[in-house]
Amino acid sequence: MRFVDEFRDAELGRVVAGELLATVDPARHYKLMEVCGGHTHAIYKYGIDDLLPDNVELVHGPGCPVCVIPMGRVDDGIAIAHEPGVIFTCFGDMLRVPGSHGTLLDAKAQGADVRMVYSPLDALRIAREQPDRQVVFFAIGFETTAPSTALTLMRAKAEGIDNFSVVCNHVTIVPPLRALLESPDLRLDGFIGPGHVSTVVGARPFQFIPERYGKPVVISGFEPLDVLQSALMLLRQLRDGRCEVENQYARVVPYDGNAAALRVMGEVFVLRPHFEWRGLGFISQSGLRLSDAYADFDAELRFATPGVRVADPKACQCGEVLKGVIKPWECKVFGTACTPERPIGTCMVSSEGACAAYYNFGRFARRREREAV
Amino acid sequence: MRVLGFAGGAGLADCAGEDGETLAVDTTLVEPVAAGERVLVHAGVALVKLGAAP
Image (cartoon, rainbow over all chains, first blue to last red; front, top):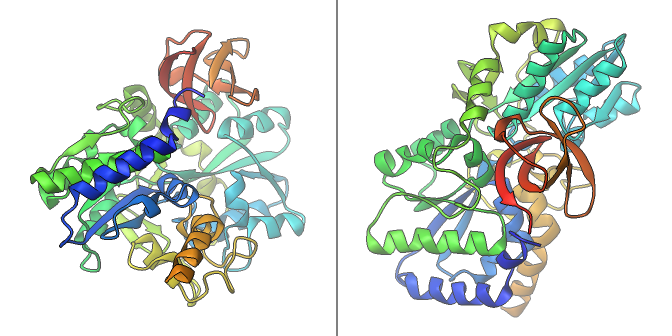
């Protein structure tokens, strides 16, 4: 398959691994953050960290959209789902994200009409087909997904569909990165930048990282060779004393992003003053809400919601995992009380979550590694 | 995904994945796009044109 097979070549992977080994300073420890959950998934699925030199550590970042949804927002969604006459739609991963009193899947079991959709366009189609029902879409995701919600709302408005609305939980990637860089908890040497977000926003928004914080960024694709090559590009920057934004994923990511996508987002959304991220707390200007022109489609205005901030369960350490402070296996409940079948934290729900990715793939390699020692 | 045609209405294309599954995809953000071209699709929307299918 074009764009895939050539980036899964094991022999080339070993060549890049050799170049990585030749590039690093053996006296130094390197900590690179992969921002995106898609990268985390690829790293564990393909065993990429096994090919890295021992002194290169990958740290998982906050770029899994399901993982960062706070419990209070899930509770708001569940409250709307229980409203009479509502068809509540969301992506599949959201169904199992725990709120304070259960999940959307639990709400469905209790009688709420909760349906999984692949895109907001599917939710709009349901609204067209069932004009006597209120159809609500629970929108999540970074700049990769926000254009889909925006285009759907533009269609709904153009068609005069008044039984469709959106709970907007869209977030933007730059504010949490800035928050991490300001955090005293974490010392990072560079970032493997988000590939799909960058198809929309381009490379330019990440320039502040080298310019203000002196850390290199390499925007990366999601195949194993993409991630390995991105790590090599970062390490070469560090070896050569360079610090810039490079684009490893140039076959997909244009430097300026997608201007049409940014334009529709600008029409449909405005920044919230602040938005809560699970585990990270409130981050200024990091979340999107519907603009005044689309306020009629705002489910938070159409329905009563609790709107209450709910603290994460004490045992759950998703916040530390999302900030890269601890590894998934260092969480107290990882793999015991918290598993993909019965998740306590969001990082164990989504396939892009660090805990789920590690549980599904990485723990086997780690077990072999421990046994070898 | 590969663009098959435009029977779905304004800005909507029928697209096929590598596994043969077909979806209606909003191509507004990558227009102009033609049948036979490949697009990167996320949540039902084409975000990037990847060129002609081999």
